[in-house]
Length: 543
Image (tube, rainbow, N blue to C red; front, side, top):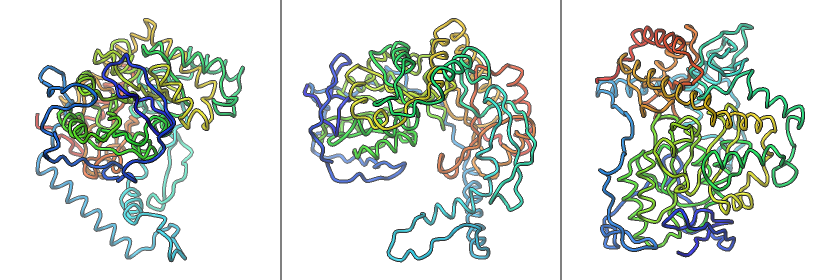
């Protein structure tokens, strides 16, 4: 099969098996089909039409005709996504409309304490009117539960810096007091974010030897033995040939994807993909079609429709391992089977799954029993399970060489701080030990226990039973704020999530479990939550 050409470099090659090599080509610089049309989540919404161009026939994409998938042979359980009652949905919308109406009245009667645009005739507005309105009159009302500063390590417990406001959340000041809370808000899945221990000692030693930063990109003077050891260890840990690491997890997607994709590429993207993936696909100037969350049947229809068009050099599926707002897990084995059946490529973001999923902590490939070499591009971050910062792209040696040569992060972004690289190395090596396996098992046990207790409580949660991200639906902004306030008062620090991270009428509380949590700490959190559930009225589940 001929190698696909992309803008700058191709590491995603049209291939029907994991054994084929990946090619790099700098020839095709033009953007096909003009500009990218952005819709929901920055993507182009797919619209399938039954035409005579072969859509209803078996797909042919660089291979013989492939039969339709028999999904009954695969585990495609998306997790629990119970719908609320019609009354709850109606009251949620009515509450939002009332909030909007009061905001408009406030905007008319009182001048906001913000800067306004002046002398802008003939220029595009700097701010979107709805975003301005939402930020000032909806988000501001609950702003006190967001962006809360901490003054400790985000371990099993965390210390919050308390604030006050005397102008209705337009500004904040510090009270001078602190509050120690059980931490259910940080991504410290395996408990490696600790002020002492092997990881902290390794980070301290790296600072003393290398300093706080290399003050240079990797492509210049920003590489050290620590970076090379981390890349080799990461590749071995994941079970692939090679890996490259970056100093920022978000930038791994945002700056890595443009170097991998280009003209003639079509991306099939899950509708709940992270903002870093959305930004990276925008910067890559590729056409993107969205499939429903974890819906492999919809994905197959989109893929076959695209193949029937016979105009794409490659078709790439972009998914996450664990979705941070839904707590769901990708049905990876089914996606890989589809990829092989139709000759597609697969980009897997394991930011929330590597370290936290699977019996050995190797991520969603380990959890689903998939050979990591069957995934064309493995991406992940060190900000969750490893208690550090940065990210990686892993796969074949040729893929990694292309990322080094064409990815913006390697050439322009400052390299990962030596102390961060040392922290990740120590954590990764710890995961491969018996103590590390015990941490992975303890995280799974804590996750199952916490989710079961929430179900018994009658609240509505989203996601897969094995996901350490546990979203609890509260629907309205007022209930989200009330829940976070009351949990904080009872010594539980957690995170409220609302629009634009979620749909406007699906605000939620997101709990993040950790192997560092004791059963006593979880029971204390659940006891506090049970009192609040009755007070605020959060028993939405009908199961």
